Length: 342
Picture 1: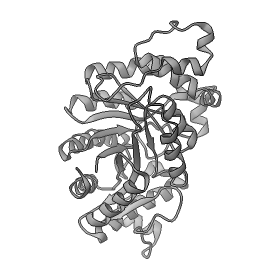
Picture 2: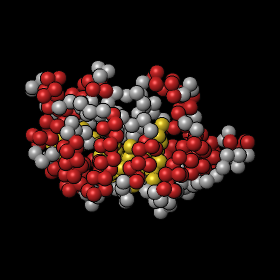
Picture 3: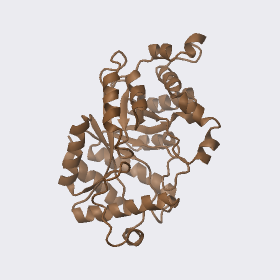
Picture 4: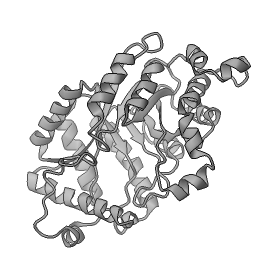
C-alpha cells in the first residue's frame, strides 16, 4: 500500500518546541529513506504540545535536507489568510523544490478561540467563505493574477469554478488538496477535482459518508480521477507489549491535553503510568469516535491498515505516529513501511 507521513510536530516532555521542530526535519529525512511518498506538516496555533504554527517555514528547511519525498502542508488553515499570499508562498516553495510540493488546506481553527481572534477578527465569516477563497487560491496557483476576472465573476462561485483547473500529478507547481472530516470538505475537493485527505484519526464517524460524497461529486473536467488519502494514527513496535507501552504515553498526553496541560509534552513511561494507573491498557483505544489509534506489532498493524484501506478504498494511507522516545517513533514508521509498503 502507498504510505505517507503526517507530522504534527509533537512536543516531548523535557524538550522544547524547537526540539520538536528539529525532530520533524529528522523524521522527514528518515521517511525519505524508508520510502514514504509524502511528508506533510500540520498547522496549529496555541495548542499545547504541538509546535508548528507555520508549516511553510518548516517546508523550506525540510526541502533543503531532503531530495525526493513530496512535502506539503496538512493543512494551511485558509480562513486566516488571503488566498493570493498563500499561493505566492507555495509557488515559491514549488520553484525551489519542483515537483515535490503539495498544498493542503482546511477550514479548522487549529487552536483555541482567543488565538483565532488574535489571528483573524473575522474567522467565522472567512470560514463560511471557504469555497470562494479556495476558488481564488486555485486560480492563483495556476498563475492567474488578481483582477483578471470580471467583477460579477469575482462574486460568483460558479464562475470561479469555471476557471479553476487543478494541477495534475506531473506539474511542477504546488498541487492543491482539501483536508477535512465532513461531507462539506469532501464536496469542496470534488468540485475542484483535487485530492481529498480525510482525518480518520480525528473523526471516524463521517469517513464513509464523506469519502462517498467526494467520489460521487468529483468533477473529472478539473481532475483526472478522485484520490483519497486516509490519515490514520498508529503506533508500531517490535512486540505488542512494547507498542502498548509507547501508546500509554500518547494516551496520557491526550489526558493532559484534555486538562489544558498538553504543553507538558508526551510523558515517559513512569509519568504515563502515574497518570493512567498501572492497569490501564492502550491496546484497544478504538472505542471512541475521535483519536482512534492502531497499536501493535507489525502484523497486527498491517492487518488493521489493510482493512481500513479496503473499507474506504483509500489510494494512500497517511500515518500519524507518536512516541515519547524519538527512536521509538522512527522505529514505528520503519516497521510500518516494512510490513505494509509497496
